[in-house]
Amino acid sequence: MTDRSGGCCGISREDVRALVDNAQPQMPRGSTVPAMRWSHLDGGEFTMGTSGHEGFAGDGEGPARRVRLDPYSISIYAVTNGQFGAFVRDTGYVTEAERFTWSYVFHALVSDELKSRVVKVPAQTPWWLPITHAYWAQPEGPRSMILDRLDHPVVHVSWHDAKAYCAWSGTRLPTEAEWEFAARGGLENALYPWGEELTPDGKHRCNIWQGHFPVVNTLDDGYLGTAPVDAYEPNGYGLHNMAGNVWEWCEDNFSPNYHRETSDLNPLCRGEIDNRSMRGGSFLCHESYCNRYRVAARNSNAADSSASNIGFRVVQSS
Picture 1: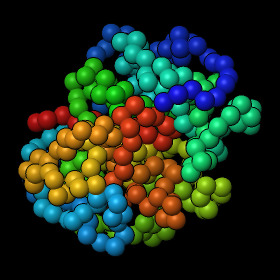
Picture 2 (picture 1 turned 180 degrees about the vertical axis):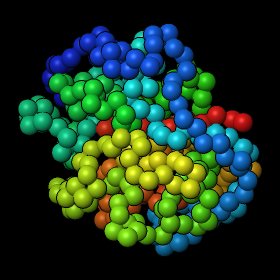
Picture 3 (picture 1 turned 90 degrees about the vertical axis):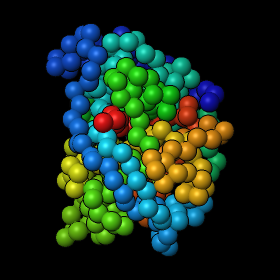
Picture 4 (picture 1 turned 30 degrees about the vertical axis):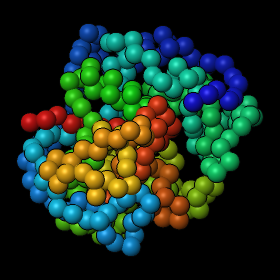
């Protein structure tokens, strides 16, 4: 990653730490375990992946196969701004977005002032703007804050950042198989964590794009950006937002041949390419562009990448 835009920081790191401290009294200085709620899963066998037509062949979503997992516990919610703030306060950790001095922010979330400073955007995805000094505590760049979003998922975290949080909290990232087993909530072969219909009885069950991507969002689900981690009804395992909201990092290296290369028992993909798997889709997913909010869908990014729609949740081995 290289810095491709100009600008100055609107709020200092020390200011943000103090604000998080004051807003999160249940996490006193020196705490080493975040306030986390868990769902214990007994593991077992399930059908992973899909052989259906809705999948992206290039992503390696199939062929569907039977996979068996050992027991584990998974966080009911994605890691929040408040929880990540406690980690930063306790350790002084500096995220990769801060070290690179920029991160990608979706254009509709960026102020006109900051847009005017952007020099170069990706040709294939011009809705992603490289914003100087966008990072977890100011997600839309200078003068944006998280004080009213402490219960939203932390974003602008790379895979390396997520691993650092795990090391501090005594947790780990889920494997792809653990993530998908949990997301399915006990349902076999369902498209979504709650079943086959995207909006059963006309009710939104996840935070994704409605309208015409990437220019018109009707906000039918109530959110342009991230939603609180407990938004929408949980799946059968009590887990919230396993579809949409933010992409969630997994432990695995990404391979389009995942289902042909990995074991049927506790599969984990280790490869030479450092791209890492992400699951769940985000608030930007739409059927016309990125129909990856299905439980079998997969995606990847470089381990040092960050953006305003990438977060993570954690697991513990039983």
